[in-house]
Length: 398
Image (cartoon, rainbow, N blue to C red):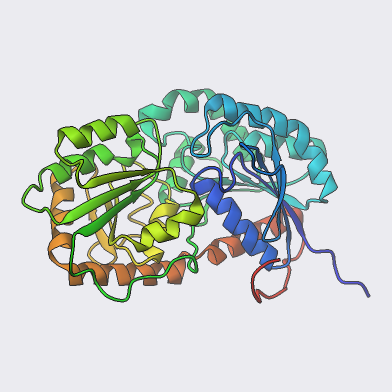
């Protein structure tokens, strides 16, 4: 008697490493984990630069299609729409080619309509994974027009999905306000626990090394961080590394100079994911004074590396960071409160180290990518009406 055919899943996302941010990272790690569990995973994503149009990423089959994308770190709305238009044409044939049982769609927009169209023309069921900016109400005024125009389409995409999933309780609540008649599930984001090595002792000599990783946009609150640091003239034993790109880079660099911080603030620019573990390991504290969040991968990765988090008390952070246990949380826009928290970790290195150890333990216990992958596997098999594979995870995928 022949063995049953392994389940086949089609992942849709306009970005996939080394292109993009947290959503692409989630796509990669969930895909790799499902391959380890005996599934076949195919990703349809956007081409960029000289990246190969077809690739094998530890068993995940990656198809990159032309979408006029110019940069790895960001994607314009016209580029997103270009990917969506091309994928609407390509996806049905690819789904048939790989004999997909169901699809996992990352981002309700611009990727969601591709899943909706696949279901309409091929009957393929799909699950939507919400990541943040694709949820109406996220990032307030910055995304208001985009969400107002795309809102009806987003609702239709969610309503036609087998399941719609947010990566934090806060994001799920926001999505529920947009579509109160649609059930919104929650599967938390994760971190690669094996990519980083946590410290074994506190940094007692030299400056305390603060780190921010993310997009340089208003949402991340770096202007508040600079205001906080500017009040700490009596504390000279710190440095700040900023890893990321975005439209506010020049403005932030100018602000750093005007506030007298430029000798202690380093802008590293966009870093490919393979370079980030070393950046985490060369830091002591992760700072994230965001105005709005889903559940940021960078924060989870930093905690996995044994870094405590100094951040804002917003949904997505306060679900992971336990105040005075794995980090310190302060109200949004509170530069004085942020400065006080930073002084605390600068002045008590043993306390800072203990926070980081607890942060690592919390991520290991609840936020590894295998937890998320197992939950998505259940939903994808439910959508397809098939049994989950029982192949054990016994090492790296091919």
